[in-house]
Amino acid sequence: MTDRKGELAENLAKVERRIADACAAAGRAREEVTLIVVTKTYPAGDVRILAELGVRHVAENRDQDAAPKAAECADLPLTWHFVGQLQTNKVRSVVGYADMVHSVDRARLVTALSKEAVRQGRELGCLIQVALDAEEPAAGGGGRGERGGVNPEGIEELGDLVARSPGLRLDGLMTVAPLTGPYAGREQAAFGRLMDLSTDLRRAHPAANMVSAGMSADLEQAVAAGATHVRVGTAVLGVRARLG
Image (cartoon, rainbow, N blue to C red; front, side, top):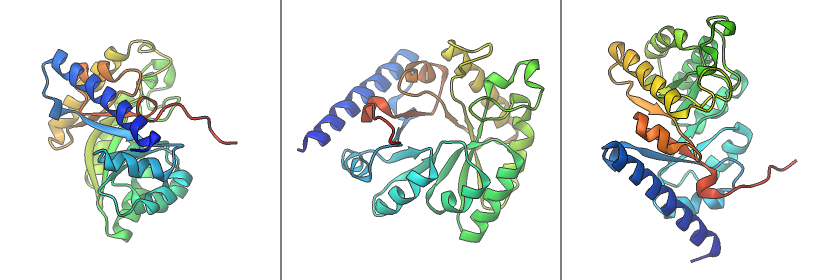
């Protein structure tokens, strides 16, 4: 076993134990939570090792990094998640490899994703990104959060648009624990709020039951709140300095 494979195997085992312990503490089955490994800034070689170790879900947040990596790993049995803020000029590329987009937060993006999914003959899973830091009145009602996402008041309208758009499938909600606003430093409360919003969404769209929340530092709080998917990068892959 190579040093890197051994390192990743050890880190992956630690994260798996954390998820299992969090599920046990919450009275949930381990199978209820899917681990998505965020491979941003790491090479295709690491993705191959992760696949050998049993990882089936990987995520990227920058198309310019993700597109060549996904192409190089096209032979692997992986589900690719796009989790970064997505500009409409990158939609054609992203739809080419991503199975799911977690960062749907505006109607213009929905329209672009739908058009391209139809053109490529694909069905794309979509999550509405919720900005819990945009919930304050100061955010101006329909505002977006600092790291993207739609104000909770905009979920219903955007969800309905995704659900009726050809080529798209409404799968649920995603959030990032906010750094500002009423939920700053209150991760479990933030994720609990997301679960309440998920319940509201599922009244109109019962199949939209995916809740993507929690990262390396706060996956336990996300699991306790009820998240179905956690997005973990550094706890598996380590800390890597950005190039440039």
